[in-house]
Length: 216
Image (cartoon, rainbow, N blue to C red):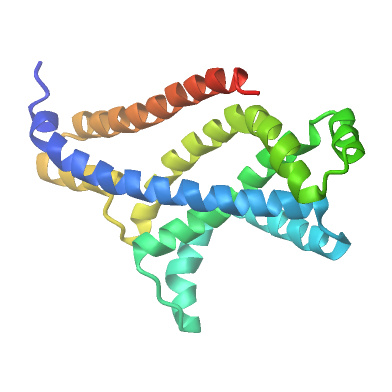
C-alpha cells in the first residue's frame, strides 16, 4: 500500500524540519557555551560560586523542560519580558541542557589523571595555558560520546516547543494529520525525520571520536 498521505505532506514536514534544525543548532551552541562556563566554575570556582552553580544544577535538572517552557511563555510577560517562541525556546532549551552539558564537561575534566596536572604545574604553566594545552584537548576526547548523546536528547526535546506556538516539525505533523486524517502515516514520517537527524549526528559523533583518537 502506497502511503499517499505521507507522500503529499512530506515536503510540508521537511519545511517544519528546517525550523527544528535551526532551533536544535542554536540550542546546542548555547547549551555548550553554558555547559563549559558552568563546568569551569564548578571545578575551579571559589566556594560561593560553586554553591550557586550547584543550586542552578539542582533546580534546572529537577524541573521538567515542559514546565520551564510554560513559565517562559506565560509567566515572563508579566515581568515585562516578552520573547517570541523561537528565541524563548532557544534560551530555555539552551539553559536547560546547559546543566547536563556542564556535567559532561566537568566529568571529563576531573577524569584526567593527577599526573597530568602535576606535570603542567612543574613546567610552570599558568592555569589558562594549562587548560588550553593540557586539559581541554584530553577532556574533549573523553567528553565527545556523552556530548553527542546529550545533543541527540536535545534534538528530540525540541518537539515540546510546539506547545508554546512555535511551528516546527511536530506541529507540522499535527497539522498534516488534521488535513489528511492519516495519523499513522504522518507521524511515521515525522519519526523518520527525527531518526535521520539523530542518526546523522550519531554517525558524525563516531567519526569525530575516531578522528580525535589520532590527535595528539
